[in-house]
Each structure stands twice: as C-alpha cells, then as structure tokens.
Length: 99
Ligand SMILES: [Zn+2]
Image (cartoon, rainbow, N blue to C red; front, top):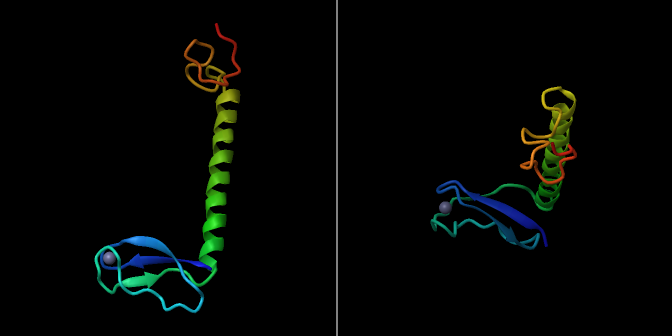
C-alpha cells in the first residue's frame, strides 16, 4: 500500500496516511477538523521521492563535512581538524599528536 502525504491548508498540519490505491483521498484534517486537506504527491511517487531525497541530503552533508576537513587540514593555520587539535581537548579521532 502506498503512503500518501497530506497537508492541511487551514492549519498547516502535515501527516502521512497508508491508503489503498483505490481509496478516496482524505478531506478532513485530523488536527483542525476542517475539510482543507490536500494530497501532496501522486500514488507511489511520494515514497520514491522521499527515499531519494533523504539519501541525497545525507550524501551531500557527508561530502560537505569531508571537504571542510580537507580545507582545514591543508590550508595552513594550525594544520589540524579543529582549533583544539594537538591539545588534550582535541576531538575524538583527531590524528594530530598531542603536544
Ligand atoms: Zn488542519
């Protein structure tokens, strides 16, 4: 059964609902009880979109943080991964020898 995303245009409430493909779209908002619900994405598409979107966000933040580490390591300055590198306050996993 696909998951449908609904948003209420009256109060902004958002939620997911498992429904069969043939089920009538929901109308009544469970939060404010007004018939202002809108189904956001078509059948099936919501699940795929959400999965890949989550993955992309994850991937981007991972590559971003590794880039940031590269900059900090090669760009002079302290030469470490954090301002506390080489001290007893260095973050766990820091490769700099302690002074
Ligand atoms: Zn509502």
